[in-house]
Image (tube, rainbow, N blue to C red; front, side, top):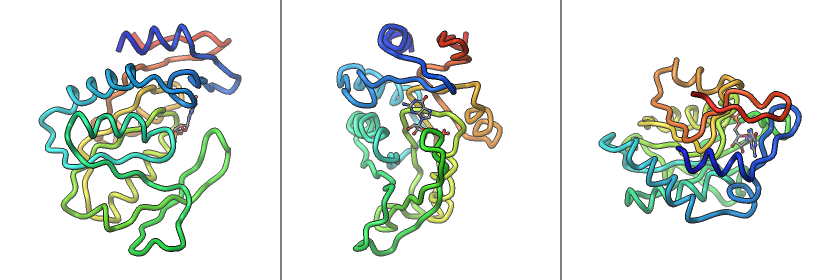
Length: 189
Ligand code: 5GP
């Protein structure tokens, strides 16, 4: 998506280790107008896939996911990174965090995920695919299915997209980055 690519070039910052900071429009301050346009793009790309619910993971997936839910007129459930003591009927799994370099537990209530659900997973970044694999595990535990996965930014060089597509998932990324070497942002052609 050209608009997002231009914004990344204008306001994104590279850090060593293949990290891209987009704090001024996605991860800290947010641009709702851009976010809305990105959500419309997802809605177009996943049209006709019989999706009945959007799933995401806190915190950065929530903003794009809620706009996709608004446009597609579907509920949005977010997977939590802390297990609330009051939560019943809970499914849990572990996700490895690329930015924090450790495993963390995540959970979702079975009240909001069932075997009837055909889900669209939305997140900000796709890197190694660990968050997505956590979602796959929770969705499988619930007996639900995944209709597709949409990411604002995919770092192709970290292999998550390749892995998920080989597993047969319909993955759509609005900006695909082939390399961040020498702090140069190279987009996938
Ligand atoms: P994965 O689980 O695919 O390895 O990594 C995806 C998650 O890690 C995303 O939810 C995102 O929060 C975080 N992440 C991975 N790479 C980056 C990055 O370059 N920049 C930012 N801001 N977050 C990232």
